[in-house]
Length: 162
Image 1 (cartoon, rainbow, N blue to C red):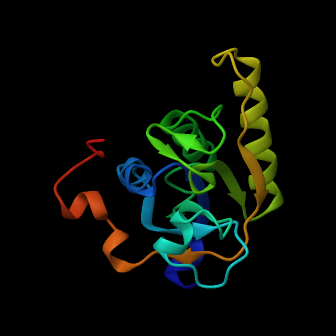
Image 2 (image 1 turned 180 degrees about the vertical axis):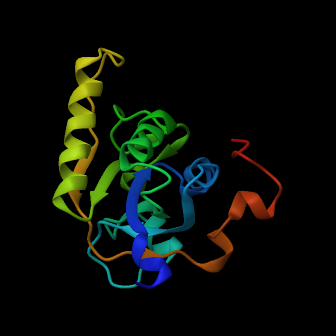
């Protein structure tokens, strides 16, 4: 078995991908993270295309992780705690469909765990408004331009100063 065959992928959209990337990067068991775009209808979108709101894509982080070191449920907990899943097309000062909340699943186990975690969070009464997070099959992932990869880390920051 090749070394990378033991790793799995998980993809999440939770607002601006810069801060989301840094949150997942700090987790033990995360092997790599690529920021990019998923969930739209345009082939090979650019950042400019996605920001226009016309492609249907969401800013997404694709996480490669070692399931022997970190569980998918831990990734889901991190996702839920990173953003407000009750705001449609908005996170903090960022507004637009590219900032919507989505869990992209790669198999039925991920789908079931995502639904279970969403139902548990809704039952917890943590939020007064309904959770609007989409849980959908993972479509093609388009990596963002190189200057977006590890954007905050390259600048010596842990979070956006917005």
